Image (spheres, rainbow, N blue to C red):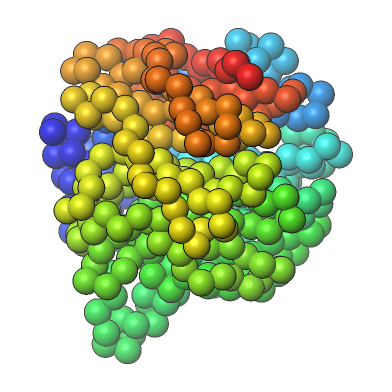
Length: 408
């Protein structure tokens, strides 16, 4: 259980108030990688710690990444084998948020608009801001970075989704509710899930709403868009007695969040940060598909479940991966009725990227297979849909960036 030990150590440093500046040399981008990344100062992709892809409608791959204290983006016309010169989005040096679940986000439409969002710290106490920049020429040029919330308490881990042409949804972990409670002399842990959207590619945003008042403060959010154009969120919520289990919510209409629906009763009672959030996909039958990690008293490990009734109930959790190899970082995505699920395992020497597929909207799954492996540092795996096909995106330090098309 070495990986869990490393995770808890990093988490406790954050809880003890260690500043982002001090923690840089101790923080690994992935607790399942036992070798910390070799110091690499360049802002280019070869030194990146996290990279996020999207496809443009002409088949161009746009990849945004964090390295050397900066957020950059570059296009590739050969599925990630080579890239054109990168464009600087923002530069924050050691204040750039590069935590375990922090990564730049990117979304694009068919008319050449691209929006990139990212997080950076505004002080030495883990309080952060969400910045964003926009392109209207397929990513060749970007606006100067702007703040999503000008006078907020703290905003981290943004996630983006294209609801329909011209409308971009964004959710993040927000600290205003926690700050209000602390100012009133009440104990408060975690954060909240906040949400807004823009209909003019970042020129203006609707007034944000707090969707859920209490969530884990350091875990990524899963976001999907239903066939009816509704935003669905999956996140690690905080239930009574400091139980950090997963939940889903649907944003009906512009800003009408549904009731919180629990994905699974794992009963992970903890006050530390797991730094490992869920993944969410929707299939064309309207089913929700969620993957997550837990160390609960009822269930431990990496799991998948589906809901055929908009989150009112979920299937019995299915374990993912081989327990002896510490499976982690699951990511699920859909292409019609087909689903792919990818995750990482570690055998003491290699980090292995493994995957399995479902042809019947998550009712049955193939056996797991090894897709790629590396002996050095690696980012989380990400699934991306482009040109009608799912691809798995994986950034490794030794082999570089890799993009693999997956079978239909």
